[in-house]
Structures are given as C-alpha cells and as structure tokens.
Length: 165
Image (cartoon, rainbow, N blue to C red; front, side):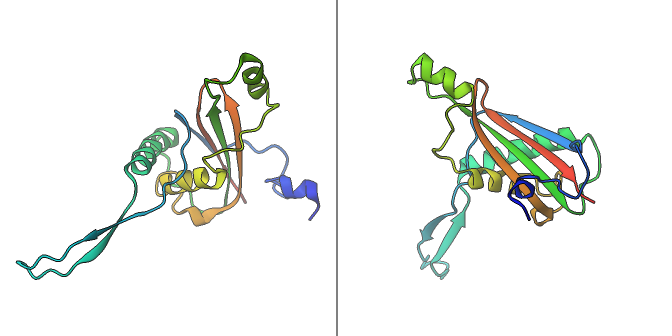
C-alpha cells in the first residue's frame, strides 16, 4: 500500500462517498476517562466480604449519554448500521483564552496544531463507545477511522459515518 493510499480511507471504495450519517456534539471534546476503582470494606453484620468496585468517571458517562442522544437524532429512526464502516472524527478544540490574538489567528487558520490533551485516540474511544447500539451495532464494525484535532471558534465533535461495501 502506498503512503497516499494509507491516508485514503476510501481506497477501493469509489470516489467521493457521502456520509451515511453525521452526528455533531457542541462543547469542548473530552477523552474517555480511565476506569476508577474503590475499595468497599467488608460488612461484618451481613457477612459480605470486601470487594473492589469499578466504575466509569461521571464526566465520561455524561458525554457518552449526550452523544447517544445526538446520534439517535441524527439517525432519524433508521436502523442501526451493520457491516463495515469508516468513521471520520473532527475534534474541534477551543483556543486557549490566554493566547495573544496573533497566535489565536494562526491556530484558527490551521497553522498551529493541537498537540495537547485530550489524545485523539481517547476522544475516538469515547465516541465509538458512546455510539454503540445507536449508529452502529458494535464499534468492532469500524474498519477504518481518522481523527482530526484542530482549533475552532466553536468547540465540538463532528462524526461522519460511511458505509463500506
């Protein structure tokens, strides 16, 4: 595979496919939070042994739920997708308020890349898990994906989903 073909999500699929569905979520993109653990002490009264409780951070749950609602609206009653998919995720990051206007303008023009947290793969994981059972049956159907992080006036996520043959 050539280097150019490696960047082409749709090589061998045909020229210029249009997305099957586009889902947008306003607000600064966040990455999927790591699971949290807490020790629950044994209860001598009920004789319940101690155990470790594993849970997902609240911020992750809230964003995944919001994304699911936006995904349902974007699907407009259509059936959940089955089969191979390609996903393009645009993570529109806010420009730091502390940056001078010159640097801000350069960032919005695409001359400065967003290289800080959250990681693109963590953002994608949040999106792929949040849209499971909403747009696609399972995120294992995603055989090609691209994450583009860039600065924008209006932060948010744009998810383009393409059906592959």
